[in-house]
Length: 185
Image (cartoon, rainbow, N blue to C red):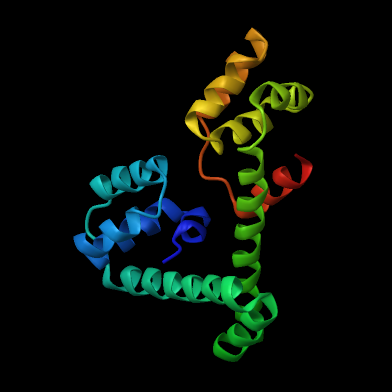
């Protein structure tokens, strides 16, 4: 089950927390095995504060997750064209294209940022010095903690303080913003 695209959507952590509650401990534990430690922590924190869930919200979240999960499965197995045909046939033209756009954008931004994880932090720091502190904060937030710390330590003191301050106040980032930043980087 691929839950990463589901988490990246607006209000994704809340939706993932609700989904976790709906599927039960055994299934949630299996889902968590596919997530990073940070993703698991965010969802667990949200599970602790989510409270009672209205039945309408539960059904909507389950339907959305199921649709995104099926679409991502077909994108991985059958390609974008097949997923598009299936979604349009299932959901209609307009909604099918919207769902497919979200799935494709999610994959694109994930691939772009995962490529940066293989980069040398020293070389990456030279590259990002000309970027806005908010962009650097976003980049650091998507790297592995050890690599992000190494990159942050290689920044000049004033910039490091600005970037870390911005990281501390980052909210969830929409897939559109992620795509724009990853395409620039």
